[in-house]
Every structure is written in structure tokens, then in C-alpha cells.
Length: 180
Image (cartoon, rainbow, N blue to C red; front, side, top):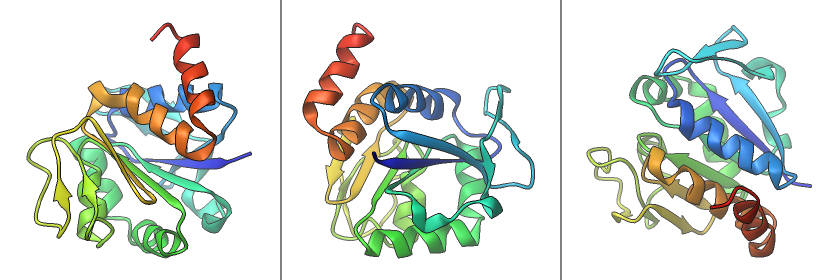
């Protein structure tokens, strides 16, 4: 069974974290939410309080198969400010582990060099000059990097993660189960 971590920071985009969380769990992927602050309670960009499963300091960063960064402007800025998170993402990406980011969060991947020579998407205005190939597609999978354009792409984004970690049949089953 694959194990994925969703990193939560105050200001994360509610649906970009919780819709994929729900769909990934439906697929049987072991998902843990991790607060990057010193509190389990994390408040989304629309004031939804979520209790994370763990604090960043409590996890074994290397024990996951996939890493997921939801967007939201303030959430993205807070994630980017976390040095240990950025260092861990670079290290695990070099091992070929899956790195997922949606909306503004792909800008973090760009700033730490993970989008170099990759096709990617993100919320318009966050594409930056990351030595990659920005597209306006809803979801892009390039090697071990999966990026999504924004909240409206949350379902397709989760579909691609499930397809990558399990297979296309399971991803289709999950979409059928939610009448998508």
C-alpha cells in the first residue's frame, strides 16, 4: 500500500487539500495530514479548522512514497518558509519519489529546482521562470512530479495521483464511486 503525506500550513486552500484527501483514501492509499507548525490545528484560507494527524517533527520524512502540497496563497508562503520541508522534498525527489503540488504550491517546487526541464501547471500568475515548461492544462504528470492548476482541478489531480500510485483502473473506480 502506498503512503502519502499532505503538508498543511495555515492558509491552505480547503478543497485542494480535502478533496484529494478523500479520494486518495477511497482508493486505499494511506494518507497522513501533517501540520508544519507546532500545533495540530491548521486553519484554511476560508477559516476551516482541520486537525492534522501529526506534527512535522513527529514524522519520518523518508517513510512516505508521495508528498503533497496544497495551494492557497498564505498556505503556500508558509510552506515555502519551512526549510526542513523544502530540503526533504528535494532529497526525496532525487530518489524518484512522487511530489505533488496544486494551485500556487507548484511555485515552491519551481523555487527549489524541482520543475527544471519538467512540464507543469499551476494557478495563473505563479508560473515563474523555473526552467520548466509551463502549460495551461488542468493537471500535468511529468516523471515523478504531479501538478494541478487550482481548486477546480482537485478531482482530476487526485485521479492522476491514484493512477500513478496504484493504477488507472483504481482511479476510474474511485471516480465512478463519486458519480464523476
